[in-house]
Image (tube, rainbow, N blue to C red; front, side):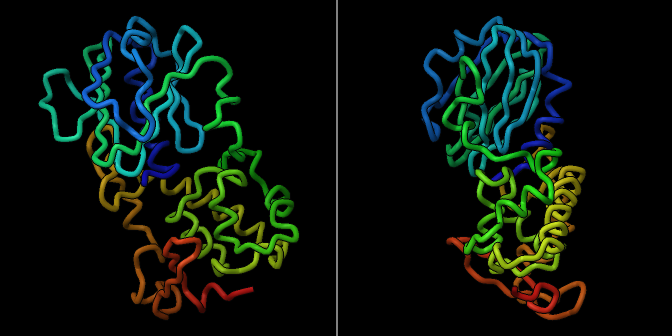
Length: 274
């Protein structure tokens, strides 16, 4: 699934090309996504100027001049490409947004778990957005905040930092990599971690996410940037997807365990349990 770095990479890629452009037409070839595409989306967006391209958690938000927002989620396997209007369609190209500069914002989603919804009113009150925690790369996510969230919690730390109500956008890949960088076992009980551990973890989450964004995200199978290129953070992964391979630091084999139904890779020597 595209996670925060992949969505932010997409946002930064499309923003300069679609901001201040007028939506001329929206072509919907398949409206059956995770939730149905907003009825009459094309008619409601046509003629509107895109005034900003924002991101909240793993959602893209295209702010339109009439005070509405087009919410886009890439789902499990979706991606957006900027193409010329003459570019041939590919399989699973479900939605085209034709812009006044001649470009097309094209949405491809093999599994159709994504979203295209038009939101009216205050977006912070929408059910998909109202309970989200702070953005990890902002000042709202800091050591004292994480200490408060971990206080007396019996759940494991990996599950806690993957909870979008605690902090958004730290998916499985980046949780595993952040915990490795911080030297914390993924099954460590959150309430047992010291202030020093949580300070290291806070900084590690920020460091890993920033590095992943600079590398254009991580491509395992389906993610591609707006230019159709893969994300190169895959080359920097230390533990994720490396089970039974030697740890780059201590040469011990990377192990894995299942936490909340997700495979979690770690180094038992570099990440002792607490």
